[in-house]
Image (cartoon, rainbow, N blue to C red):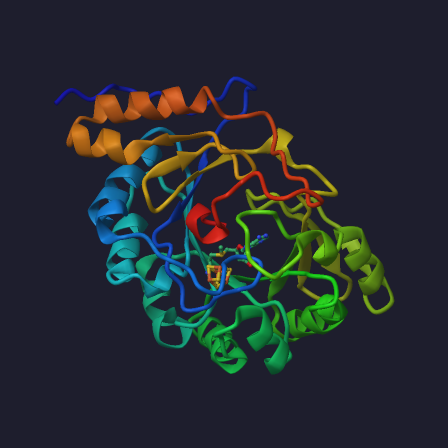
Length: 335
Ligand code: SAM
Ligand code: SF4
């Protein structure tokens, strides 16, 4: 097998360098959040999803092509059997500067210390409310206390970068934004507020009714906190503000009200092995087929990835007021 040296770098036709890969390692989850999944989900059969070895091969190839940061996500990544072993292997990839994780926190009580040892640098933990009943209503199957215990375990394990991700929905949890920031300040961690994205048809939940813009959250916070804009970037689309007098940063991910596509540096690998070039478009390339048809052929694989970059769109096409054009769910996408 010949290996191209150096590997081609990942630069798209708009001159954006891609150095950040998000990998969904499972579509399964122990929660059923209203904005992410239908209540009655059918998950993918095993043969259709990438094996852990295939995920490792793809990740290593991307790192060889200049990817410096990998985020492991899902579905709930920590419910996949063997996830920890995969993370340990990824943590040793030469050239990878940051291995980070997004989780719902349900498994952190038992796994936090092992995740730290595996080389995970930062963890984003989803938490939309501190009210147990609302938590149950949003996640349908989750228990708030389990997640709060998981956050404590992650702090005890010594993670320097912990962040809460909260999707804010009008009339479900929009009155919680100050409580959530206060909790983040008490814990000495960061928090990002996310505008809901229209991915998949999720049943009774009406997205245009639930839309709550980042500017409204900022207005709500202004009564209780002083927020100073900071230039900090963590390689993602969040715009950050420091809560004055604390170490907590508040981020806003605003795909609708503040389009961040011009600085997009990332692509996503779905658990089915499709490389998604944009969260808000259907453009994708089937890398699993390339990998399975030509195992061990790095040249074919790197060429398929370079060709894929050529179709990375300039920007997403979300419109909260229309039926979703993107039919895949967030758990498939790797949010
Ligand atoms: N299960 C893990 C979790 O919940 O953190 C990882 C996967 S989840 C798909 C990743 C992130 O996407 C979570 O913070 C979740 O709140 C967010 N998310 C899910 N569906 C979304 C949607 N339709 N719009 C915006 N964010 C969404
Ligand atoms: Fe599961 Fe995360 Fe989706 Fe909630 S947002 S259903 S925790 S994958």
